[in-house]
Length: 483
Image (spheres, rainbow, N blue to C red):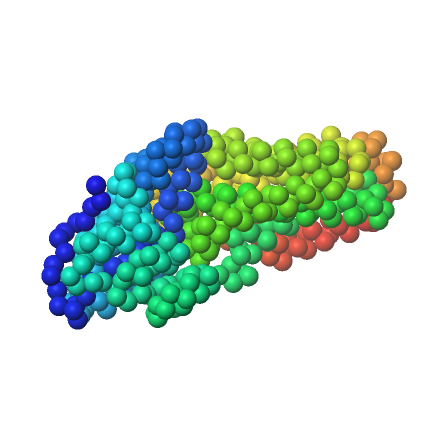
């Protein structure tokens, strides 16, 4: 049964009801996609149950997701322009109704939270209140007085056609053309559109610096030919595209958790700056492009890239909720980049580099967790729901980070003493001066994290930190001098 919270009063024409859509209109999001990715992130095995529900109809799927969703209407990205229009209608004494194709549990939660609606309409598990079905229901309820309708998408066209006044927000160009062809003089509310900067933030282009690791085997092996450089560049691009695809997927899964975070709530998907549907479309585009470029390098490289994708996807869905397993997985993702670089340029991957990188990136992953926990402690936030860490683990995490970092430097010192170094460098003694630089940088990174001067990613911090940049230049200069 479709639901309305209260009966529709008989009103004068100048007090015509205002009906407001939910997904993409009142909120800059899509509750079906939100609850779907939230459920898959909570339990990937639920995909079987969700498919079974979908076979019974879209309304049944929405009901199934609404029953298990950890839904918090207080953190949704509500649209200010729509809220202002609702308030304007209420000030004039007009009744305002919420009409959505989302499940009644979610719609009721939103309506109860805002407390501004005279009633609401929603899907109920048997009927999907969308498009023509929604228009027919509203026509039946408001047949004597008519209604004005605020919507945003093609599914709202039948409703706009039945309404007295059509009001749109964030309508795509194709929908605008359709409205014009139908002779509807729709009012378009102002809405911010995503810019290229918003998209670069979603794709986390700044994180591409991590993929520079694919060049490390090329540099350490001193293989500087045009072909090897081209292969390394292609490997860098493939990893960057693949990483962006998984970053977007991870943001889709973590929407609720990100909105409760003091800084992550400003991410493009959590804040509603980029529609979830666009994000869902861009993920396969990025992954297919990454695979195509990976195949240009070699089948062996493609196999490594596939391993990276499998591990990072497993991290997004499962491993990030496992204490310490998550940081080991993060460290392995960095190591895989190094392996991929070696495979791309066809050089032998050093076991010394493997050991050093595993310890070093384990330290960075632990520092990242330390910063995340510190933010929650300082902000008075509860225990993280999407991480298996407690706020009281802060000091232990810092100790583990220091241990991993100093172990990495020990491995590096042993590497300098090995025969492999003497065959690659004419002045290997200069490499010893890298050890104090690394000791300084690891220690300083921990101090900056402890003093709350570091953001949630130590690599992003290093790219902007003057002392870190100087330390990196010194290391580079020492390696060049030792060759």
